[in-house]
Length: 471
Image (tube, rainbow, N blue to C red):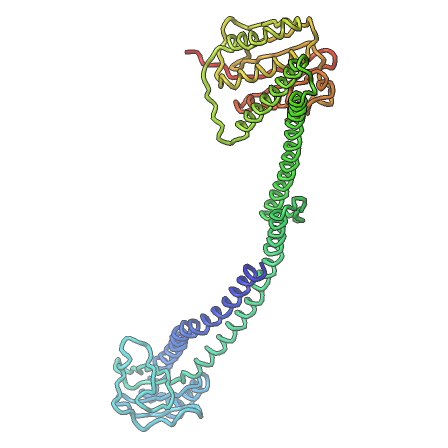
């Protein structure tokens, strides 16, 4: 992280500083120079015209002496730090005043043209070669009796404007460096609010990748980084739970497979080497067949759960009569019910009741619930299957009068491979997956299943299905 993101951000920060200085140096001077010249020239033009219009005409009307004019021109020269020339219509110098750094005024201006500035208020350059450096020249006519009798020329050195521009540029550079220094706060904010949390998140990703799911990101801020950290912490806890479940699942499967396989292997070896005499072989072959059926049931249940675990599980929903299905499932248990003298009582809301669901999955739900009820019911007891309608839902209840489920086991019966202590004595062939399959099937339909049980009294399972629409 240090060699990539943070380093890139520092490099960008440095490049930004160089580009800022370069931009200010190249653009600001050029952008400010022309407007500054226009502003200074405009001020000189205004002062020149005020003098030419309001004071100098008195010279041509003999109201002012040459000395009076010279005093006024000296005042303008001192105020503007410029060379001031008062000429007649032909360009001959009447009088002038100039600062020490300006050359003396010529006796007459060669090729004098008062209109040479055109539409512009000023001229720039050395003004016919009379100045060594560039100057701004403003020409204002002195009008007497509606005719120009002379002209006032003011020449200001552009170096003065360059000095003003230099002062402005120093202020701009100082401001720029202050802003650049203050922008360092952004870098510090990036360090504390982005880079450090991101480093911790990256470290967490490395820990998770190496298998350390116990690592927690110590970020508790209420922003996007905090939300991401909380999400990753939650993900790691879910992965831990998944890993624990996988270990438990593998252990349970291994145990449930190992027990019947060990039994089958032992009995087959005993029959093969003659340990079990021929007259007892039929007994042990039945035991082997029983254990084989256990393995078959376990394999089938695992395949069914795997089908529910896949995200692409597709339910083939269709309308069918739930009462007809209950009758068929009940008939399939007729043999074992006769052996245990158990009666199945059917209480239907109507003669026919259609639901919209996957017929094969619901048949398996009913089979597993009825199979459980028979296993845990006492001899000569009654199992009740009842249906009721409530709005657009059909509720099916399977109720027995068996051993019941302990209160502390009610929340665990849906777990895979779980068997309560009371059920272990009666459920010799069970895999502990039946109720897990039931819940997965009902939830896949977007429906609910609940259980009510009292130890020593009995258990009732109730699940809902959507009623089929009326054709």
